[in-house]
Length: 231
Image 1 (spheres, one colour):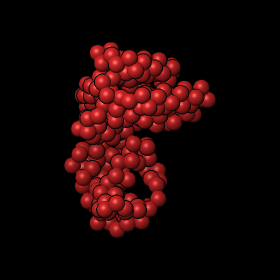
Image 2 (cartoon, rainbow, N blue to C red):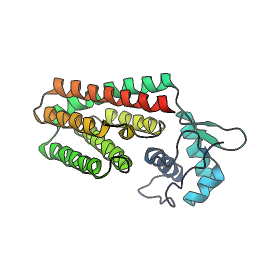
Image 3 (cartoon, rainbow, N blue to C red):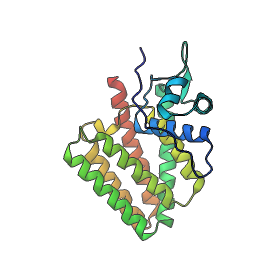
């Protein structure tokens, strides 16, 4: 039986000229990233509309967009179900992520400003503090800081198309369930990898930054496969 999804935020506030359907779509994507919705969860129009305090029309539009992107699929009866990716899709996803993260690190080595490099170090310090507090309980915080770290590299790369594509990949990663930081030893090895990437970017060594970033995603895949084997 599909799990009942956790509550995903409060009401939608439309602003800045954003259409209501777009606002609902963004809210659902954020809920996926936050883990409020997981693979196998059922989403019903009326429940989402009530939760976000909107009519069912923009919810229907948003769910249609999620289905078009492949994040959800029709459920038996009413509503849709968040998709569960098969192993081939996971491998394809990480292969693309390795390419994109490598490119982002290379471009960041060329374009990142000193304040942006300092910001990467600040994010990494917060990551270390979260991992030292309690690795098991802080896995969610580490995952959030990890996303912030990679998003900061993408912004420093100065390529809007790469940035947009990377954000979509993060939505797909959210469908995979528990963060790889629940794997024993992963927080400490990830920190070492992050630190090496920062140093390569600061040294303006694009070749090394790309190599390190790709290796970092390769290690993330190894941990992801460990998690999938336990499911």
